[in-house]
Amino acid sequence: MSAVEPVNTAANLLELEDVRVRLGGSAILHGVSFTVAAAGVTALLGRNGVGKTTTAKSVLGLYPATGSIRLDGRELIGLPTHAVARLGIGYVPEDRGVFAGLTVAENLRLAEPREQPKAGYPRVYELFPVLEARAAQPAGTLSGGEQQMLAIGRILLRRNRLLVVDEPTKGLSPKVAAEVARALKEVAETVPVLLIEQNLSVVRTLAGQAVVLDTGRVAHRGATRDLLADPARTNALLGVSTARADPVRADTARADARGGTA
Amino acid sequence: MTTVLLLTATGLGVAALYFLVASGLTLIFGLMDVLNFAHGAFVGLGGYVGWTVADRLPGSPGLVLGLLAGVAAGAATAAVTELAVIRPLYGRPLDQVLATVGLGLAIPALLQAVWGADARTWTLPGWLAGTVGLFGARIPSVRFLLIGLAMALLLGLRLLLGRTRAGLVVRAGVEDREMVTALGIDVRRANLAVFALGGAAAGLGGALFGLYQGSVSPGDGTSLLVYAFVVVVLGGAGSITGTALAAVAVGLVQQYADYASASLGDESVVILLAAVLLLRRRNLRGRPA
Image (tube, rainbow over all chains, first blue to last red; front, side):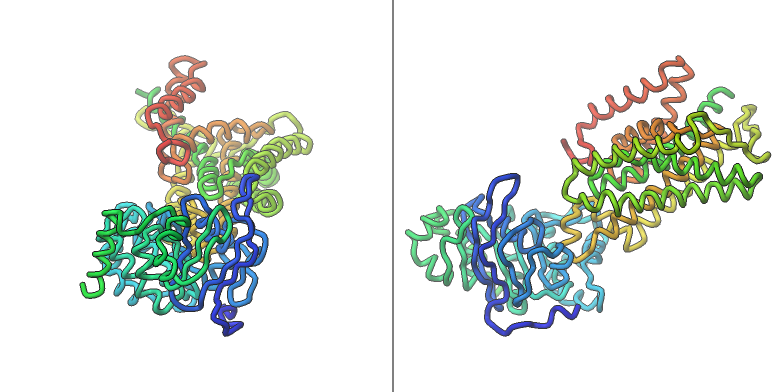
């Protein structure tokens, strides 16, 4: 695809402007506007049901949206999902989107790009050796963490301009969640990531910028550090006092801290 | 013993027809979530186009060309249906179903308008018109042709789904169509291919139904479609092997029950369906309900 040539050199890779989504007669997004930087991780935060996943899906063209969603200045609204994906947006959905009845190898093969289909494998196997070890196994028999690694590894076979990753640590044990977060951190060094995540310790470790949604609108934009340094604001926006008050999350945070050297 | 053999051969022959019709239905439903009520129309059209060719051209060449014409008619009609009727209605499943119901009624009416309401006799070539002796039972030769072609289709579909990239896309699409598109794959091409392939199998089924009955009539497709739907439900949507096993189960149960009591054949299929649904407690897609 020649469309992956950068059109502008501005710091913003993805721009959402007044994005509105109606599903089943009710408005889910009431005009969402924010930008995703061309490097690093931008977190998309908010309580359950505020429209984070809807935002992700409308970027991918999985939900019909109005307004404007631009990748490098190019309008995505109206494009079918496969065309959005071919422009270089990689998607790891909340339910992981792993094809349970297909083997790990088949899941990977589906994601291979048309040009140089095998070029991405060494890096994926380096990040997630388990995928090589279990290539012949049906993906449905993998553990939750391994399925998440497959979902992330699979999309890395493609040439991505941006990854949209929805709740990658959800339902994982703290140790596995930390492992996934560590891999994402490594991935984000080369590909910008829009990350939906409830686990604030993961957000703190990975995301430089944070966008907070509240009932279908953007309630906060700014540096993650500033947001999380303000417990009152964090509590008001996300409904949690501090991330570390939750023993499971505190455990993840410790695992994260160890992660750098483990 | 000879009765059991004859019933079994007949049951397997009917099962072959059910499989030919249901294999397309199950892939279409599995991949696209479209309950294709027009599938019976592809069967009917395949039967009539096949009969027309075989009627003009007697003997074995006419038979082979008739079957091929039935396949082509089914595939072409199905492809046009996907492009002209189903595709404009993507994302509107109820409208898609209603449109296929409409086609399923319109095409048999058209067949009747063109070829008349009475059954047209399909004269078989000599080698196929007789019977084959098997352990004392006289089995009509046509049954073997039906069974053989259905097994060839089963094998071919399994190879296609299991060994090719197109098959991989279809299998993945049956599980999660959205995710397939999110991987940059244009699933519309798979939809069209599956529709055409399903239509080809249905067209072949229609022509073979003509051979089996020795005639074609406008209602053929609709009568096969009912059982094909039962087979799809029993076999699990999107599963070719499940569909084949379910077709055999329905065909055999129907024939055995029919022998026990002439009215029991069709009821037994409904009883089988109810029993499996109650015991399995899974929905149509094979996932826990």
